[in-house]
Length: 605
Image (cartoon, rainbow, N blue to C red; front, top):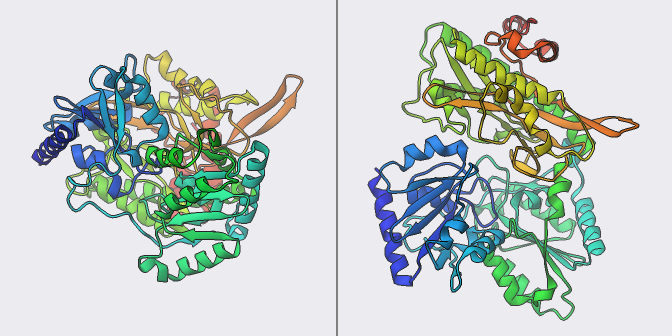
């Protein structure tokens, strides 16, 4: 099977020779800088066979390399074996990024400008030696990729914020226009799909696991234009879409064809009173930006960070109320799954990772308001769990045995919020090393859960709290500790994060963030404990204002693998109190036999 990737890379090299390109750079994203692109834009996977979500590829005449981070090192080595593609590790000491690598290996670099952000291309251009330049080639692989999927089109729905929380569309547009007036901008072009979905209160399913609609949004003081491909397909007759477009029209949102964004920008650029247009280069693709620079005078284009990112990250009181209930309902589904799994494995029946994953999804699907999973379930037993983003195979997945550790990382999309939870489950007897690792990771998660910090603190300033128990034992993990989570939107969102890499964004009351330290031993086991926490006010003293976390996730931690003396008295008290709260919250809503099982699981240590 690997021969197809060798042949595709060879075909790309022939195209490069024909065009006079020294290198081609392909990203794993789409024209909207999405983390999870639709099938049409999975260019890295098509060319190399690598299926991870975060990777970029560089091909020259004599080298093909894939750049990705520690979440995917093991996966990349396996999937790239035999393709001729070499792994380049990122976010590790001594790592050489793509711009720096290109500076020594190429002068003429071709990129698919639709799938590279402005910032990424500018970094490449700045790094290239004198005489070097980047060539923007939209849909670069089009003539090589036979049967390439089309741009996906799915029905559109609008959110009833009175029922499901949030702010009315018209109020969000008014807020953005006020920001534009203060900043002195006449127009704003939004290209990030979750920002557009948030502003317009629309949802779709153009991208798997993400309730998004592929589109652009252009806002001025006089109009709102939404560029989306819905008219030329069966979706135009879909009742939800028809109603949604009618509702948008009532709020003076004009729905236009997806590609009409180019004409709208051209018309705006020729307007004698065009003023200034604002764009975010971190999410806007280079091809659109290049078009804007051709249409607008240089001094009328302003680049910066979109204000929508931060506004969207701070949840409203109504959204927070719905999220609390959503995490209870999600916890009920996960508890039923964990009970089922334990009973099935203990009975001697062979349950593999794929069946377990599908069973968990079935429990979630029974929840009213469920709209699908928020990402692909990670259902991993034993050595498979050492891959932080393990993709569970439908055929040939491992059988879950009555010993060792099973890791399940999953989440749901609901009309009332997005969930994400990881539980590492002792399936029976565990080794001393498994228990040590299990306890140290859990202690790190608990220590971060108990954090109290002054207003203005960034996530990078408290990341060490989750790592210290591991560091003291000379252990660590390579991924971030926490990411923001959307409200019936993307399971990963910014601007906040909890990770050791510098991010100046302070944690603010109303932000919802994951807390998920881990530990991975290749060929042995992997452990991750994840709860979702809400940043909230924690009082004022003569030393200023203080914040802490409220844990939203409602699902017990199995204590059978915990070493109490490693956990320590304060973390142990937190664990006992948390498990007791889970039991008291969930037991009245569970079948009697599962409630009795949960009572046993949550007895204090």
